[in-house]
Image (cartoon, rainbow, N blue to C red; front, side, top):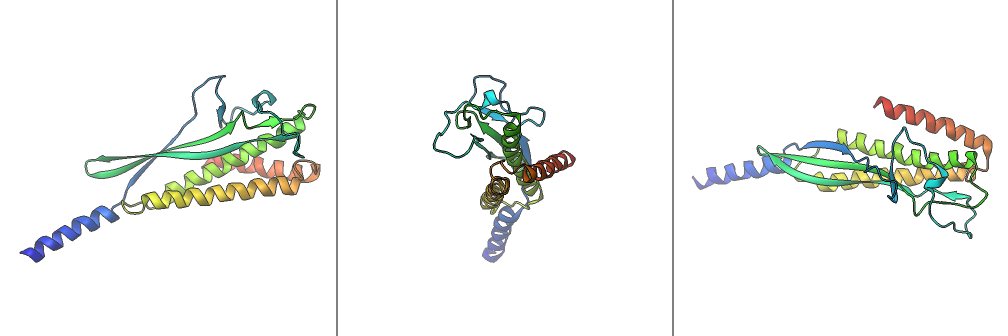
Length: 193
């Protein structure tokens, strides 16, 4: 009898540790407020120079800097014995950390900076796709979400560095035009997912 009870107990533990977990993904789009330091990505809203509210770094060789990133909040709940993960995703532009030097606020430079924010969005969407494809269990959800996030954030950094490096921070107009087309194509692909 003890062995049957022990086996039953192990089956319950095994089921709870390996059972599938439902994942619900929500986009946080922010609260409409002109006073906020944060702009959440909206494919319909392009950056404007007035969004770059930070003090310029006069020691930097850059004409402007876009400070953007993405993150998530995770909440867990149990419904009828089934574990549900609610993941809220946000992609943001930090107004106070983004800046432009006086006299450098051209339309061409703004396109370059907008594409930095677009690259952040593209990698945020990759994060969401990978979350949707992942097989979460009770025992792996925390480490798996962290691993997916770390990988996507590293891809974001790599792409941002390649973008600035290959375009010479936008100074190489021919390569900038190639990147503009590439980023525009990637943005279109996000709307199809």
